[in-house]
Each structure stands twice: as C-alpha cells, then as structure tokens.
Image 1: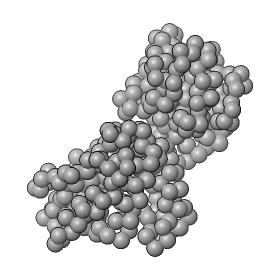
Image 2 (image 1 turned 90 degrees about the vertical axis):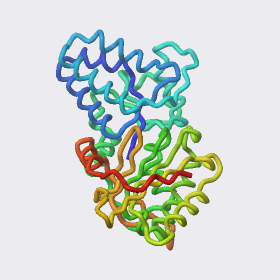
Image 3 (image 1 turned 45 degrees about the vertical axis):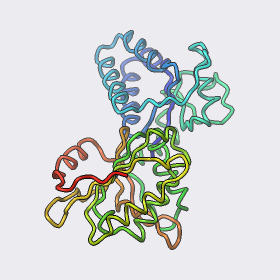
Image 4 (image 1 turned 60 degrees about the vertical axis):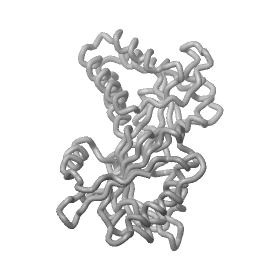
Length: 318
C-alpha cells in the first residue's frame, strides 16, 4: 500500500525543458507520491540538496512554488528515508547507485531522466516523466491510494497480509498510534491473535527498533481484562523489540468518552484506515479476515482526532 521511490533530481530540469505541460505533469506525479510514497535518500542528503538547487534554478514561478510546497510537505511528513549509501559517488552516478542498492532499499520505482542509461541488476521498475502514467507502478499506486484495498477472508497468510499492507509504512517508523475502541473492549480471539502476530512480525524488519514505541487508544474493558491485555502484550514483545515501550490509553466509552468509529494506525509518516480494526487476522486459519485497508487523509483525520475527549483515566505504560 505504501511504495518506495527514488526520485532523480534531474527530472526537474527535464520537465522544465518540456515546457509548462511537463511541469504540471510533474506536479501531478508528486501529489501522488504525497498520498502513499516514501522517497529514498542517500546518507549524505544528496537528493534533498540537489532538489533545493534544481528548484531554486527553476524559471517558472508557479511551478517552482508548487513543487517547493510539495517537497516541503514530503519533508514535514518525514517521507525521505535514508536507505541508500553514498560511497562518495558523483551526482551522475547516483541513479546507478540507487538501482544497485534498490533491492536492499526495497525500491518499487526509479523515476529518472534517462531510464535506459543505467544498469539495473535487480530489474527495478524505472521510467521517465513521459512514460510514468502508463507504468504498472502508477496504476497500482493510484488504485490503492484512491480506493484502498479490499481483502477476501483467507486470501493471504498472516505474514503476506502484513507485508503487503503495512511493511513499508512501518519499516522506518518511530511511534505507532492505534485507535480502536473494540481492541480493549473485545480483546481475546481475533484481537489477541492479531496483536501477537503484529508485534512479532514488526520485530523482524523495523529499521530502528530502539526508536519504536506503540500507543494503543481503546475502550476500557470490564473486570480485570485490562491487566490481562497488559500481560499478553508484554509477552508478545521479543528479540529486537523486547524493550519496546507500550502505552495503553483506556477510555470510559460507557461514560461518553467516545473514540471515532473509524479505526486508525498512525505513524509520523502516514495514516492507515484499518477498516474493521486491529482484529484483521483469524486465529483459526492463521490468515487474514475479510476487510478493507485504506489511507486517512488529513482532512478526515484531523477532525476525527480532535473529537476524542480528554480521558479520565491515566495511561498505562510498560
């Protein structure tokens, strides 16, 4: 659902050479990236430095303002991820470097001015601005961005389901906020199974395990179930995430402390609409349940989160 892209800064000059229409096409492409893409960056900040220079040299005032605004938004949302090693390569070798390192960086696409001029040992999808909208990458990215994805029950194993829906969204995350009223009120069964699989799956790939913290916002369960939830989540942590901080914020929903009807998973980079919620796996089949995942836009997310009342209970951290 989230995709990794290497954006060659030279594309900006190529778009300028193509005139106003090409520049507007580039603006459209970047708006798509804003929806559900991460941009691969070198450890020496080459891409962002080159983008700044290219944009400052752009003669078209309207295009320059639009592109600067889009890249600023991507930067604000922490969409540049440092997955490429510079090796002191010159600027004209960076596309080749990205392609060589593309498998480890989990690149889905390289957008560059001259796609046929570089070795591509891992057969990563590569295109220029002219052909971008006809690529399978853009067709899939746009479909997922606009409509999310609906899953039939049992269509994926636990790991395949989590990999496709959330892996790239979470690999470089720091904080994970889950909003799901029923996670607390109906823990056990599907919720317990999904939480266990999720935490243990996350441990296998997250880039900076020492930086990851999990926050769960949910309804207060009855009896001593809150202690059971805490004990179970503690047991689910292991390996690189054995010390991952977990905080549960319970809400007295019976007393009017309502959470949004929508269920969300939110990081500092992106917000996922979880559809049915955090009970997306079936313990009987060890496969996914039926449901739909999509993206929560800022226009939807901001009022939903603002509607959450201040909880009367203190958070539980462990």
